[in-house]
Length: 316
Image (cartoon, rainbow, N blue to C red):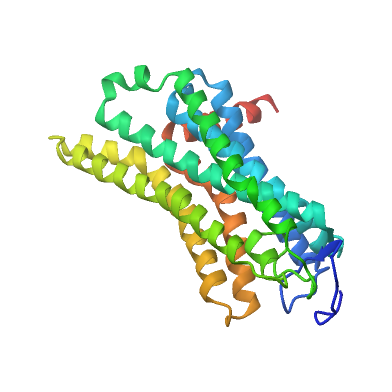
């Protein structure tokens, strides 16, 4: 690993960091990391396969869940190359352009996931507020347009970020504090003013993720108001139960995001281990746990998965 105090001009590469205090080429870390990625791909792949095969799951709720699963897989694929290169092959160096590309995809899919969670909140709102018109409101065409809009918004918002980074001169250390490239992490290594980068990052957080969180909160306020107006206690619980998995997915995304944002902006005095832990939780935990939550709490998916495994066991 390169000397942190080295003075370099126009870096052609960055040095990624593993977990402080733990040897990078550690078989236990490599195994744990491989296990997490395997769970991510198997879990989300199972969700996608079950929804595709079972005609009864061809409903708006499950189409949005499919988009969420695809987003989680894409987000994991964005971090996979650099994480494996460090913990499996002890290779820390990443070319400048490759780092910028990884940063673009990580932030883009992060915004896509936030947009998908908003779409799923709207889906639950329509299903509970207007159950008789649910299928007519959320048609295949509308779901497709929502998906395209979410992806387009993410790409357009993140598109300027690589150019804002490339305009900066780097004449200090080229050692990043994470195992992958993030805008705020690269930005801190610049030896010129990063006010524009910081301001743009703040605007993006407020007007995309902040607005998304507010829309989700308002959606659930209307959902709760509707549910409380249902006379039957059984029906109230049934309606709320359809929202539980989505609420878990929202918490799994936004709580780590708030944590990593706060540590980057206000936790410069904290241990590097804290920064690394928060960033890894933010990017690795939701893709692993989302399919587990939906498999456990969604009866249709759970029963289909059980049926699929029982059929395979009977064949053998």
